[in-house]
Length: 370
Image (cartoon, rainbow, N blue to C red; front, side):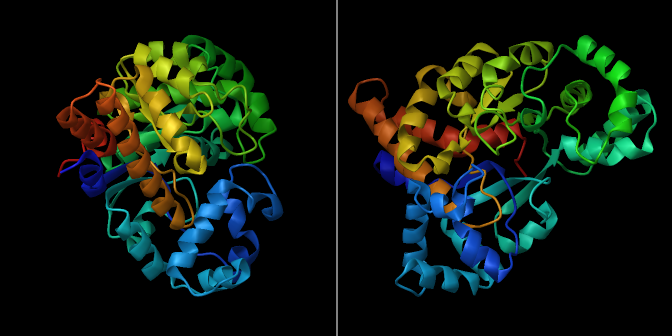
């Protein structure tokens, strides 16, 4: 069996993704292109990304219609439950780790839309936001927050997820400094609270405490890095900012999400330097499409392949699961074939690498064996 044939048969573990969601018909016909860019772009621009053009080909292969408008009309009429089961089924994904913070579909509800095994990840910041109105002092808030995190992990959540990058950036203060600043700022934060927490000190203090809980439970913490929504500052999502945080939590496995794109080599440097750092390859795969192969190549320049994890970061629409699996299998196979041809890997070792990245590393890191 060739490398490419073997890669095509591996049952994927998607270490970072989101549930799909039922959408109004007009959302599909008018806004579908916007699901193929992370920017806050109008549909007219989004439909001219390579990612969206590939998505149209996907629709053309599966739905009735010749023009873009006809294909979108057909897409708006699908039964999402059946359609999603079919699409995710064709990806060969066995396990999906689903972030419970977005979209509105819960990981439990998501199970109706896929035959894959769904395991939940707890998004931290919404938990803090839910608790702030009911807690007048920081200590009470943090105690309640830690209890909620522990309850989730006791209830079967396999990891934690932070979007600190979206709120205050990745330049996380050391634990003692974050705690002291949060204590002095909390009254003002609570007085001005509008439902969305953006104060760096409170976010960082809670992140440190949650990371300690994760160490106690031996589960990973995922952190958004690299590109994302418009509220993620392009500079402060650079994963090198996480060096002090990683050093403060060497007993906790920390997964840098999205390959840090466009800071892929920086993310690789961090992952290859800190023993507790792992690198997820989602979102950049499949969003950059013809850039996925170079992304894999850059990630593998310095990072031990035991620390690389397949992910899709698919959200809301099941097409993203298909596009991610397609690109990961095709482009990882190309990189592995190149490494064999250039004399770095044997064919057998290349096959081992594929199994590690696409499945085995996540199975071990998140303790997914049944």
